[in-house]
Amino acid sequence: MTFSTKALLLASAVSLAAPAFAAGTHPVTGEPLADDQTFTYRVLDEHTSVDPQIVEDVTGSEIVRDLFEGLYNQDAEGNLEPGVALSHTVNEDNTVYTFTLRPDAKWSDGKTVTAGDFVYAWRRLADPATASAYQWYVEVMNLKNAGPVMAGEMGLEELGVRAIDDTTLEVTLENPMPYFALTTTHTSTFPAPAWAIEAHGPDWIKPGNIVVNGAYTLTEHVPNERSVRERNPMYWNNDATIIDKVVALVINDENVALTRYFAGELDRTEIPAGQYPSLKGSNPEEATVFPRLCSYYYTINMSDSAPEFLKDVRVRQALSLAVNRDIIVEKVLQGGQTAAYTFTPGATANFQVPAVEYAGMTQAERNARAAELLSEAGYDKSNPLEIDLIYNTSEAHKKVAIAIAQMWKQTLGVKVTMSNQEWKTFLETRGNQDYQIARAGWCGDYNEASTFLDLVQSGSGYNDAKYASAEVDALLAEAKTMADPQANYTKIEEIIAVDMPLIPIYHYAGNFMIATDLENWPVKNVEQNWYSRNLYKIAE
Image (tube, rainbow, N blue to C red; front, side):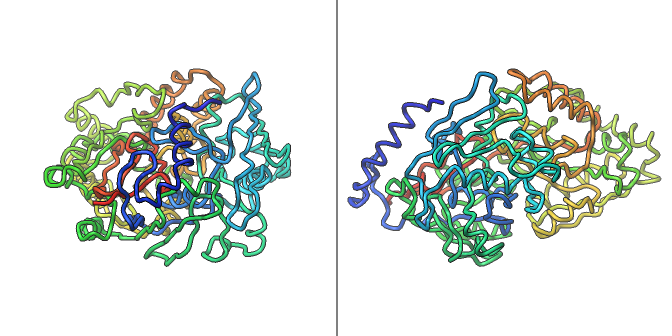
């Protein structure tokens, strides 16, 4: 694989010019640097973990990308760039990938990062004993024997990954998959230090115990309050890092976070729902909006334990049709989001959004059809459908839920009981199918449509609806081997637009207040895989 000349030149310039930091200027741009290089930002909830094979949420993954480094990273536009891997080769039929690792990659305790550390991590991810919520990703990666290994029917050593030597990692796939390298930027594929895990068990990720190979190490963690990471001097490119310290503060209320941002306590925070227009007017250099590779949706419980009315496709279709997505994005959120009628967003690389039938209807037509369907299912305003809706604690989620509940009531006479739950409780409730309808969001693990559509595969770990379609499963399996899988993706979107196991509501926009002295936020990377080592603060 080759990488852009510009990226390589920039990396070289940063590395060679590191001594210029002492002079207080950026080695590439020449900008004067602030004396205090501490980046502080707000997160909504406590992260699930900082263990690469255990973490399952976006904010936890952001921390993990600072603490650990995988085979490849992403540049400011989302293109692959060298991480622990310097390059890779692939055989003629795209089934065997061979990665050459950099010899100077070190763990924070001084040990060399080896191909064996990746083999250990990937086997650990696949191991049923690990009970990783992301175990299914091994099958998404298409690793040879992933299914039987995950099921405990084959030994871990049968998984399609092996260390030829310390700096050569060989990966064998079940079937050809041209975009395999893209999957290696996901945190679940990052290496893990077997010796630290064996010594400390689940406590290996605590400050003082944790061993990392990324640009930062974890120095403090107060659950539900803050986590702190600081420069890792053993990181192979430490000399090019400018940000010394990163602080993530858990602030559940987005308006409180905004107040603390204006008080100078935060360098970055999310813009509260509905406030982008006014903030863009008052603080145009700070209010920032850009496309994201994410979808906001409601998942519908279709498991064996679900109430019978949710197993009726007419009910699910009616609920989706009656959602006025334009009101959600234009009146409630007002932050650059786009209405969603498909699960996969238009920002996805090499993907054309299909023209599913209900997307071409007016809202009046959708409402009329929704009322007909619900009536056919036996419900109307004289015999109202009653639904429980859950969401994780957030003012924005609450506003969306209230708006949709009102739409369902006005159009269909549906009575909605809403409740919010703390993040980890919410994940457990939803994951155990102990819900009727639940708020959900998904950001792509890599930039290809399968990262979204795999969630409706019957065996997916994040198929919280427990939706199962043999046709969808077959189309997904076939798509992985196709040079151009668009036809399959179009068909899948058409099927789920009818079966409606989930209700697409909107596609995200990045929506931040970013301090004027914080530079280099990767607004052109739709995956928003950002790395603190690439940021810097200028003197003001």
